[in-house]
Length: 324
Image (cartoon, rainbow, N blue to C red; front, side):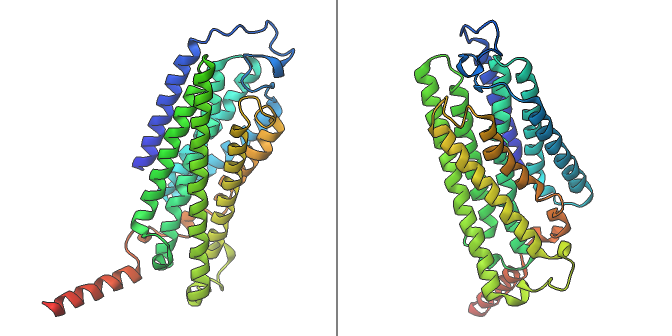
């Protein structure tokens, strides 16, 4: 919760600072911004945002976040709040694309749109980080996680916050009217994206190893819910989380390649690439938790030590007593 609040505060501070920088922009814009958007020096997108595509994405994300808001209220899992917060920000980002269609040369609107769409996945990633620890405790297999469960979520979430700050700093600098400053901002932003990709990739390895260990060494737990309906089987949630992580990983890779191409690369100036490489994977990543909401699989007791940890604690206590 604290990390979500911190990230939200940093996000809106970045938005405020970059909007102030946009107000000082003195670039001469063409009288007709719709005539040649690709060569328009004031059009940061390099194209005119399509309202139909924007509407589809906006409505889709809005439906997902409203359903998940209902789920978090009535089915629990308040520790997934970071994902819900990120989805509201993501939805607002698409709302600003409508404004960009009417004012394609507005740097202030572009900054708001870009920051909300680019940085909101940090909240989605943080939710998956926390979910692994909760799932491991729920099935009493925390000992199969490569990192200590108590610290794992904190380690990955803090890395997520750190990469968020780097990306936000870089994104704010790219709005500078001084080319060298803007270029440095792009490099900083790219570094943040790469660090986020590396962190996420390492997390996916940790998660894959966890599932492998449970499958190979804990057959009773792996088959624990085999006689239950699929929407009550913990393996269903684990599969949904795997798909979510893969989708975010694909999106992160796309963003790294896009930033590496520079300000006006083939990817950054293509609306089709934006929807295929960024929007579609993220929409799938967040939609996985609509039918498979973690609160229906994981009880609040998962916040406490698992049976394995409690047993180890008792054994340690007994051994100390014997020594005394």
